[in-house]
Image (cartoon, rainbow, N blue to C red; front, side, top):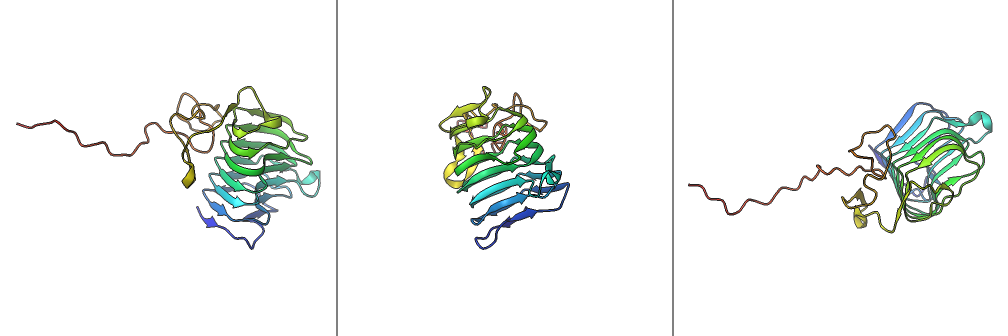
Length: 229
């Protein structure tokens, strides 16, 4: 991945004509003038995955801009971490069959999710973890499969579902150092649903990082009380 950031430019990425593009494992920080990533004017099959977006004004926006002929089709936003945004984390205006799964949204001053204009028709929003963020702005959505999201010190608003996990603290490894992996005792562990991605059974976790119970690389203490004759 790459790292980019500037208070002097408008966007880290601005898609106006493109299809079947993968944006993966990048760090984009400090875009305080506008959206960090904007996808517009009819760009199909754009996948934004595994990125860190922080300390900006707005996170990711997908919008039609130019009328119904420029609808955004079959795009995906998954396993991203978006934190310390002034306005919103994710915004949609004129998207069809959108996939929004396993994102971690933290300290969003405005809206965690924003749906407006032509909004969203079809797709799914699942396994996302939202912490200390404003309530979603929901307008005009249809045929969206919304379920199994986590809301911690954050209101789900119009995205609320009975399958959601709620609480005050998702128990990250170290929030102070922006380590947003989950502790083993987090209520977000095993709280998700299968969305055709790899996970450790019995169920996927919420947010961008899957807790791995076998992933502890800390060396064990040296044995004591052993003698050799």
